[in-house]
Image 1: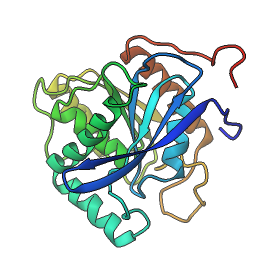
Image 2: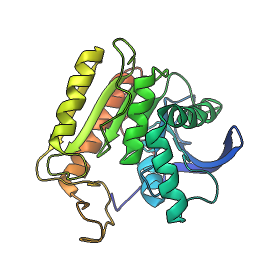
Image 3: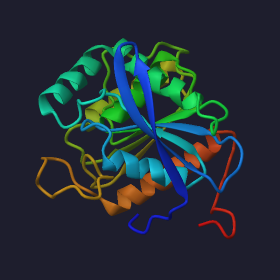
Length: 255
C-alpha cells in the first residue's frame, strides 16, 4: 500500500538468543488503548529489511502489536556469505530455527502492549520459520506462511500442531513447486492439523515484494492481486485465531 497511514508507532527492540544479539523492530497503534494480540513477523532470506518492516506496519495498522523480529543476528544482514550460511544452518537444524523463533516470541510477550497467545506470520524463509514453529508445537494461536518454503526434514507428528495454519502460495512459484505443496497437505492431514491453503493463479515467488526488480531474481516477481488477496486472507485468518478480534479502521479522529 503506497499511501500508508501514520497510525503505527515503532521502536527498536534488542533481545538475545543465548550468545547471539538480535535487534528487531516493534510496531503498534498508540490510538488503540490496552493490550493487543501479538504477531511475530518473520522476515525473508535477506534479513530484517524494509519489506519486513512495511509488512509489520501493515498489520499494526489493523490493531495488532507486531514484532518484526531478527532471525540472523546483529551485523549479518547485508553480508551475503553470512546470510546464506545462516539460512542453510536453519534449514538443516529445525531445533535451532525453533529456538531462534522462540527468542522473538519471548521478546514479543514482554512488550506491555501485547496480550494473549500470539500468531506468527512469515514471508519466504520466514514462512518456513513460522511453519517450523507450528510443527514443533510452540504455543501459537496461528501460523501463516506467505510464499514460504513448505518442505521439511522433520514432518509434524500426529497431534503436534496446535496452531491453526494458513498458507498463501503462488501457483507458478518455481522455488516451491506443486509437488512440495502436495507433500505439505499430506503432512498436515497426517498430523491432524487445522490448516488451509490459498493458491493464487499465475503468481510466482515473492509476490508481496512491491519493489522487486523484474528479472533480477529468477522466479521472483511482485503480483499486486496476489499481494492484496493474501493480505486480506491473512487479516481474516488472524481475526479468527486471535480471539475473534476484528479491528477495522482506527478510532475517529486518530491520525
